[in-house]
Length: 168
Image 1 (cartoon, helix red, strand yellow):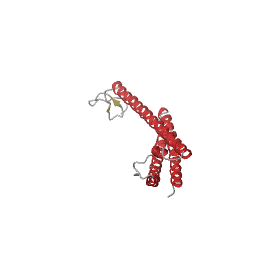
Image 2 (spheres, one colour; image 1 turned 60 degrees about the vertical axis):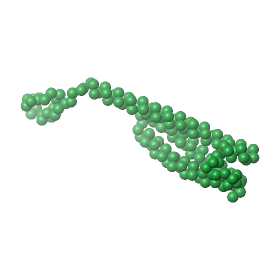
Image 3 (cartoon, one colour; image 1 turned 90 degrees about the vertical axis):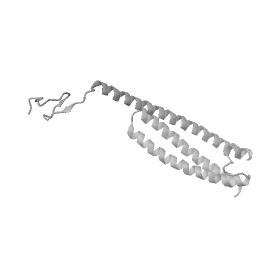
Image 4 (cartoon, one colour; image 1 turned 135 degrees about the vertical axis):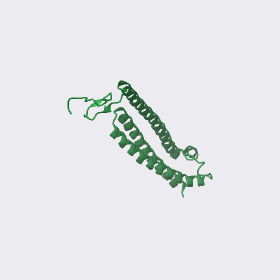
């Protein structure tokens, strides 16, 4: 395979990966908004969108790895050892600048996505703490459990056969 074709294939794959990562970043933003709004439906939609995007990103990553094989062969390296950064230093300046720019954009996107995911994790943990605090508070407000009375009334003390209400 020609070096130019192999590099072009790699760049197209990286551009596709970049677009998918950008979409994942947008979904993470929507997740943050859904968490803050307590919108479970929107959060569920975001989770499904994220699953689809993660599957797509895995597929693109496999394509990226396959695109590196002919390049590694040209430069006499193992495909697992050749990185995009290492490849940038071996190509002419025009192509290497474009490739470097794509790699930098992907790195920034990955850091942004990672930061958003950490923020979302903290937001969810905070919401769960609030729910737990509310449950604890409710447990202290009425610690006794009501008992069922055959009259249909709820009583917090056993009736011992007494009529709780005048309605029989």
